[in-house]
Amino acid sequence: MNYRHAFHAGNVGDVLKHVVLLELLHALHRKPSPVHLLDTHAGIGVYDLASDEAQRGGEYRFGIGAVLADPAAQRVLARYVAALRALNPDLAPGGAGLRRYPGSPWLLKQGLREQDRLTLCELHPQDAETLKANIGRDPRVAVHHRDGFAALKALLPPTPRRGLALIDPAYEAKDEFVVLTKAVLAGLQRWPVGQFAIWYPIKEQKTVDAWKTELARQAQTETIAVELTIRAAKNARQMNGSGLLLINPPWQIEQTLQPMLDFLKGRLVREPGGGARIQTLVKAA
Image (cartoon, rainbow, N blue to C red; front, side):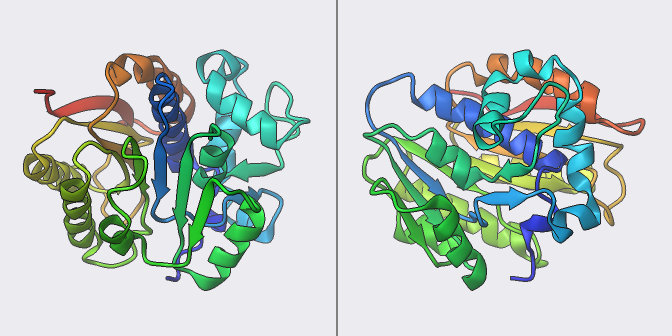
């Protein structure tokens, strides 16, 4: 529980995660029937980019800062930029006026319809309290101070049954991928019709490929991976990129995401060997 996302808000991993998340939510909303959204490792919901934590690492400058520097972002990433502007009314082309960065709880709440429901889980006690303050009172939203992995068993299947679980742990523990795999499979067993979006860091590509291939094999349902690396993923001691494993993804989401991924590749790759891809691990039946 040492991880605090305030140091990393708006970085390259956040950009990829939130661009994809908003498109998943949009796909769910093509139908008028209600959805239930679960964020297992929610954080505090909103981050101040002028804070000491954000300024210390300055990771947002190479993430959201680099994206907004290109005027084309407003066209290619329309939903994402619109969400940023909703939180930052003074946001101008080029990124001027960006002061706060939305975490996934804020984005999910912003997209809720009257008939939808949102459950947020955060284990860190101080962050859980901050999350409640940032999200505010809303009868459609429930905030739980609890372990997100345990929530995949305790809170699933949700009501309504259609929906999405976003899983974004800190990856602090050595066995995090093992624990994650067990939790995802348990959640999928209880909620086979649910969509699952699992964010993961990419340090050494071969290790990550082996993990996601095995998880997809055990899941035995349609699974794709959306990845962006800023350099060759060969050094296990540094963050080289990130990805989202999408289980039961929406129809044709690959076609929707590909131009966005191409744009992010052009803005965010920093060194030779970096790149972006959408990989099919298990095809739809």
